[in-house]
Image (cartoon, rainbow over all chains, first blue to last red):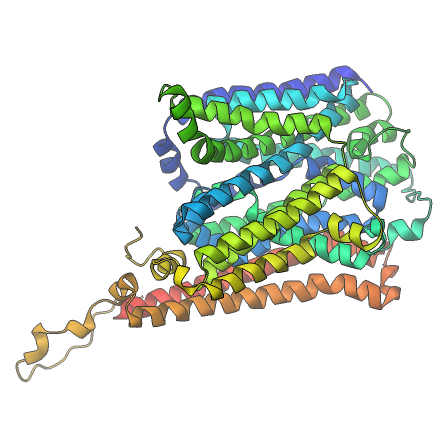
Length: 508
Length: 125
């Protein structure tokens, strides 16, 4: 593989991101600038921005690698990522926008009128954010090693540095336009090479994929059979992805830039269309990989398939150019998702965990901005360190674990919070605690101890199917048992969450 | 929208009750103050929206959640081919997305209709 092209593409993407971040500092100097700008963002641009932020390493590299290795069943991943937005649309899009909450912790506090629940939500946002950042950084290391042969720790470090520089400068995230452009960059970077590769494949007489045991690869209910319970694993994965999307830290913030609840719905509708369009392409790489690269060299991760495929199909300049385009697109994916996550996590660290302590230590010497920069550093250093220590378990697998934790904690909080008047403060806290503990334990065992055999392995590897119902049940049962702890202003909050904005109500 | 002026009425005597039309205060205030009447309207709106949400989710759960069950119970569908492409690949890689979009569109239109009707009812008073 020609190293020069790849280095140029990656450098270009990183530089553009940094430059735009620096300009962003000028364009959006105060929070009010951000809010005012938010009112003028159209649903289509907002939807592109959500897509740009959402399509991560797992989407760009992970899915193709999974389809290549495990076949048909891996298509449930992109399906789940997309369906998650339909569920979000149907259950919480408009109420979340109308709540006026900027982060998940804000929503928890506004709805439950409790700082304890807010704290719990903050800790979970940080945990889920770190879990989701981990595969982004691992993916960056992998992509850079594939393209340039650099050691694995370099790629993650580059992403971490660019993101910290950007986030600390205050740019990037606040500019919807940048994330919106990122979506189209990623779509182009994956679609154009796909069409060229398809054309070459037709030119070769469209040879069939080569698989050792083709029935297993081609047919459903095999690929997720790692622990021998494919039907359970399929359903559990679908639940985690479908219900977890609404609980990801970097998703809710984007809804704030919608002018009202109606626009929030329309934005989500467009997101479903944009994601569906993007996800038509990654599986193609997986299938074509089976045609042209029936076996990968030993020690090469399947996640790098997307970057290796063009060279195998079209040896020479064209293949190298396409590889570089794909590497650039992949870095765009790492940077935009990592930026969004880092901002969300840093905001929560600064606001809820750092602010009081920092002023006590420094005697009010530290400004809010300094606090935020420290928080941004913390937000990405921890997952970077973890990405060096923890053995990679596959990008999409890692991301699905983050979804499982989000689905077991924030899904009950948001759904019950938006639709159930009898949700009590204690009930919500208990639901978060129980769901969060169970899902985290399952994830911890899977990541640290590796996959187990039989039912224990299946239940821990895909925990969503049992942790989500347990979390919902806990929240409901405890709420019913503590009717005295239902927040005082529940009725007024419900009016705010559900009435259309064209009615002149007091919206607090 | 009811922009037309109300029909003309021939006034034949003084309207003694004209000054005390307390019962006809705007319904928006009932919503704001969470009076019993306001709560009735609110729970009407919420249950209409929730019902719609559950209909859409049930459709999705049966349509999408039914697929693994179909593959499990009718093994022939696992390798069924439509033209050169196996059915499960066609459904999961392509067909799912437009269907999801159509379902989402249906939901958006219906929920906007519910809100429009709610606004009209509330404004009418």
